[in-house]
Length: 342
Image (tube, rainbow, N blue to C red; front, side, top):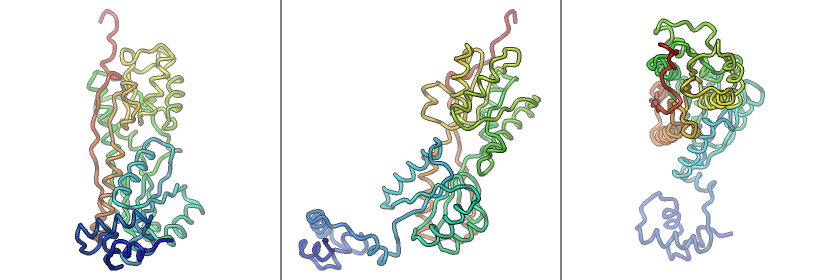
């Protein structure tokens, strides 16, 4: 196995110089650095992360905890986190965190406590006070995505305001009979995403003087979820709404597919709007509010690495960065069809 001494010998420099050249810590001329890097490549030398951590105090590894892997928002965040961390020379270890359980406790009490990480990123997980305290005691910088966490810098969108804006878009087009299809309280996500988006919908409707009684249907945040509810609620033309605000783009796309099967024209007979900015939104010409999960992920990495370089106390770290969403209007929304003779 090749060592740093072999690299130094081939490059014709001292071992300490070779170490500085490869670690990037300490002054080394560009000419010397080039010779050392070339020598390392020639003999296939790879620096030991354990040895490097003894010198720098860093493991160059970040722990990421997340409740879902397969759902679109979370997979987008994960992919962007990994790319951003790799660009900065960091590795990522992923923990698919379950709800309150012995398995969840073991993640905090064993894996995150005993394994060496430079920091932790929590994605869509509302950590308990005990979990936050444990990470703070370990001296691990922590950044969250999804909603406020005590003593932690977190990044999120305003779900209430986003849902209100989506509903207001439909109201501005002249719709009054608007249905909201979203997540159920029984399947509530952390940070109350489902109920917050329902609250935003109700707020906009109430401000417009419209009732929300009977105007909510629950389903999973998936295409099949939206499709199933769409078939169930759109089939009877006597009770069919003129517009649907879906709590996610996947639900919205499912509703559009169901409408097409029922012979309902979108947007002539039914307007549909979602929240997310899903890649399929453009293909289905879906009007949506883009929340840019990749931007959220990159900002989380920037924040965590800044905390590693210049640690702040808990009070200073305790703030929420609310990122704006942007309304993208496509052809899934228009004014309601006017009755014949109107």
